[in-house]
Structure formats: C-alpha cells, structure tokens
Length: 536
Image (cartoon, rainbow, N blue to C red; front, side, top):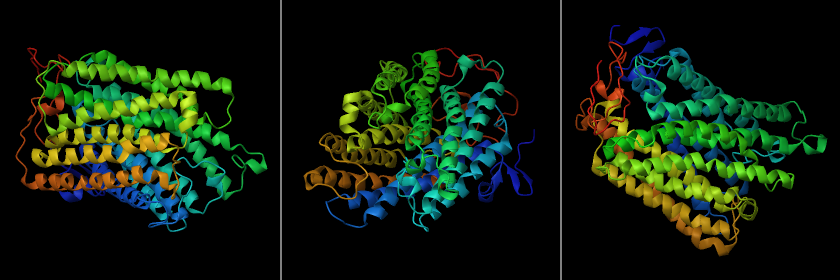
C-alpha cells in the first residue's frame, strides 16, 4: 500500500498539510488529532465559564451575574466539560493510539470514524446557540419539572446532546470491531495494550447506556415541543422516571470518562518504572467488571428522592462493590512502581498525581454510597468536590499524562520538560486549593447550584476562587509548550521513552498507512527488564 495522502474530493486520508486536518479525513491519526484539538477548544471555553462561576461565588451577594444567568453558566459548564472535553479528548487519544498499538492499518470503519467526529461540531454549535434563546437553566442533570418549564434553550440543549450521543455510539462500535478483529498476528487478547482493554469496557458502556439517555432526551424534547406528559407531574407524568433513565446512563458515564484514563495510566507507568505491569489480567478483567457493575448503582443518586427505603440497601451495596475492581487497579499500579527505577518525567508525574487525586475522589465516593452520609451531604458542595476529584483529579490528569507521553509520537518532537513541570505544579496546586475546601463547606451544609450563600461560607469560597485562578493560568504554559514544541521542540526519534508497545516501533509521526507489513507479536507490551525479541 502506497504511503501517501489520498484525496477523493472532500474526503481525504492522511495528514501532510494543515488543510488535511480541516476536512472530512478517514485516517484515524488525523481524526485523533481533530478530536484532541477540538476538545481543547471546549476545555478552554468551559474553563472560562468556570472562572465566571467562581468569581460570582468569591463573596456572598451578586458580583457578576444574577440567578438565571448563573444557572445557565453552570449548566453549560458541566455539559461542555463532560460531553465536549473529557469524552472527546479520550476518544481522540484512543483513536490515535489504539490502532497503532494493535498493529492495525486503521480503524475498522474509517468513514464512520470521521462521521462520528463531525457529529460533534453541530452538537456543540447548538449547545452554544441555546444561550441566544435564553439558555438551559436546569443543570447538566436537567431534572424535571424545572427542565420542562424553562426557556427554549433547554430544548436546543436536549437536541444538541443527541448529536453527541450518536457520536459516542458510533465510536464505540468502531472500537469494538477494531479491537476484536484487527489485531496483528500473534496478538492474543492477553497481549493487547491495556488501553485497548479499557476501550472495550468503555465501548460496552457507551453502546448499552447512551441509547437510554437518548431516549430520555427524546421524551424531554417531546414534553417541551409537543406537550406530551412523560415527566409532567401535574398531568400524570413522573419526574422520577427521568432520574432513573438519566442516572442509568450517567453513573456509568463516569466510567466512560475514567476507564480510558485507567488505560492511559497502565501504559505510562510501566515505561517509566522500567518494570512489567503488575497483574495484567486483573487490570484488564477489572475494567470489564466496572463496566458491568457500573450499571447496578444508578439509584444511589436518588436516596433522597423518596424511593422505597428497602431499595436503598442493595444500591448502597453495589455502589460500594464497584470500588473493588477499581482498587485492584490502584494496587496493581502501586505494585508496578514499587521497586522500579522510576523516572520522573511530566507524563509519569501526571500519572502519579492521577492515582493520588483519584483515590481521594474514590474514597469520598464510598462515603456518598453510604445512605446516612449521602442523605446528609446530598446536593451540597461535598458532592461538587467529589465529582471534580474524580473527573478533574482523575480524568484530566490522565489526559495530560497521555498527551505528554504520546506527543512525541504524534508530532515527532518532545515537549519542553521545564514548561511541563510548571504546568503540572500549577495544575496540581490550583486544583487542590480550589476543591479541597469545598469538602468542608459541603459537610457544613453549603448547597450547590446557588448563586448566593450564607456569609458563614465566605472563606472556603474565597480560597476556592483564588485556587481556580491558578488552575486557569496553568493552561497557559501547556498551550505555549504545545505550540512552540510543534515547531521548535527537540526531535524525538521513533522511541524516546524506550517503550515496547507497537506504536513505538514506527517513525514519529507514523506513516500514513501505519505498518508497511503486518507486525508479528510474540510477547505482551510490558516486558521491561526481560529479554525481548520482536519480529516484524
């Protein structure tokens, strides 16, 4: 197969010039970069919204925006960060790396892969246009009856998420078919990169859970547009049905946003510890266990909704059980680095920060799984702190670990380590200063989703706002580093980290069609310290 960029009208394959990244392109590597860049645009946008929110909460009273505008801000902030930042960023990394790590020439369905990507811009555009007609005001959870009473922006919000939902479903199908049918000769399931195992589990959740959310959004839209009564309590509808449908997807969605991060950490740590991954099969199978058990815990978000008290117990138990396979991963990572020759690069530092921050979020999650504690802190800032320790301290730290790790493979150049360390410490300190005090505010009873609050909560909110400024500023050295290194960074060579997985056997960046001949795999990709011979 000729290693050249192909151009068939508006459809291209391969990325040799800037215009190749601005059109419908079927090369999984180009699509991965498109996902990553697009998601970072929304990361910046969502971060700006967060800064306005924190500025409003810096002191009691009205600072910048009133109650209605505040509701719109935190609704769009949560929606953007979940559906247009974390999920697409991981999808982009996996799009780029998984086919290379499997020894495949591309994803199984290249045009479907590109179509999945290009469903996101119209969805994002609709989401932003919702501001024009009043904006969605019911939070990213969109609980009825509020979500069926607000302005037309709520309808546009619901329609925009349908685009994002179909994008994730199509991507999930593509990943499953690619992973199970396009592995290199000799690559058994137990020789796959652990990122591929993570994407299998993630894809299962997306295929089973996202249609439920899409159905709920369709019912919400019909309620608003055609006057149906699915969730309208005054007309015989049941608003709690929305909560059941929404959380049946949205609690597993937490694992959609964290399982790929588990895969990234499992790729990064062995390379810089120079040790084989500890408990390969346990890590792989625990991802599948999380995908299964994750569908059995949704009602722990509804302990205060008036549900039958007897139902609280089984959901409390399953919510605690799901911590077990997660603990398997954490102890496996710790065993991997224990006694290893750990090299502290920016990638490995973000990976270590991921473990510590995610453990804090996981422990507070165990508290929230307990019925009496959950009832006490429901809808307080304790929940906000927990969510951000999981999704920022966990997911975002893993995204940065993966970007610093694979940036040399994607661009052929190394990121500057000094700027990277500055980025890490600003992020780590800013994040903890922002969200650690919110645990205490929540335990003392400060409600979330309010634009004003009792002056007794002034100090933790002021500290959180100051921390958020440092956290926001942390993006600047990263963006500068990424752009500068693209043109002036040190040349990386094919394998600057001396890694063993298949993507590092190729040039940096890889050829358009990846492998000239299919590689033959004779070992797992984590045999550090062992005598390894690879035939290709």
